[in-house]
Length: 452
Image 1: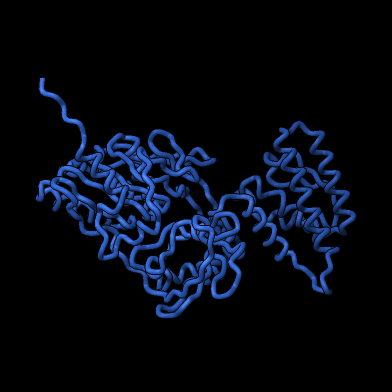
Image 2: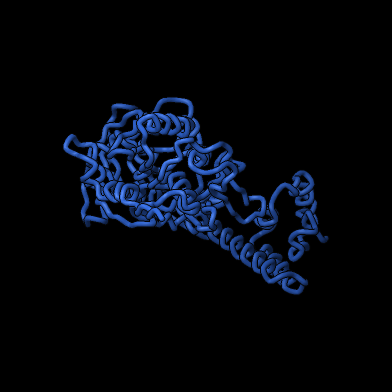
């Protein structure tokens, strides 16, 4: 009996597989109960091949799959389609061989364990932000949006085998302990963190406010390792600090993250600076880990004309091309603008600095930013787990990719992270910060036009 895989227009190269009559009837029934049209074509073959294992012994499966592969080769199919079939056949045969033959102290390995391992292996071939999130981890994530949880106040990312600090949040336990961008978590509470995913680290670092966590970190920039004990706190921080006046006509504004109210707060500060006859503003985005995309668009809109392009995304699918534009009038202050960035500036901070740089609205000063600007989509799985996939990346208006590239400043001025993090000390003055000093020079030393 000959069975046709549904639906025929897709996966034409494997549309025919001969199986025994009893298996065929059972298989046909299972296909009839499943609406496969909702799946992408790349999802068809694996469930179909796996279903054969339920009905036929392994030797028979091998023969039937080989027959299907030979038929696929003889069909008029694209080389890409044929390669997809061959690789799926290879994967499915390996899966069954491991399940049937692998022995470890009498323990039987399940299909679920093998499939979970296979999916995790596939995700490891992607960027550090794509991962398999297990059911329990999803539950914990939902709880964080509903209750109060303590943390150490650092934004983290995965780089290679290590979970790495992107930036500490000002005033948090991580900030007070002098954690710096680029620090790697080597141990968390005595347990090796090598190979940890971001979710693994979050699960270890989060806890009840007031409880302690001990971390051991490596700092590649100084070629040393150190341990520190941190007491978890509820992390609450204003996104915009009150402005300062550095010199006559020069204002300084620090933005720590991009939240719902960030643009509104900046607008109020600009209005207050206008009353002081400030004509130049230094916008400090150093150590800003990002936040909400919409907030980044709204902040950029304070300095650019309406309908200006701020950022756009591109992915595999055509519909993933999307543009984000300003929608409000800029603030009436319209100051000369310098933006400060460093390796701790990420995500929304990179979008704002890149857009203002492309529009030649601001001079960007500092060091190259972190390079984290991608769209992660949650794809739910039938067992309650989910795939977190990078499905698009952000580009500046001129077409520069931000992700893993960062924003390169117009003027590079280096400041050690220790020096920058110590700026909250009582002895600190802005003249001790070379990046702020250079920004002030740029807005005060502009050449005047000669009167003719």
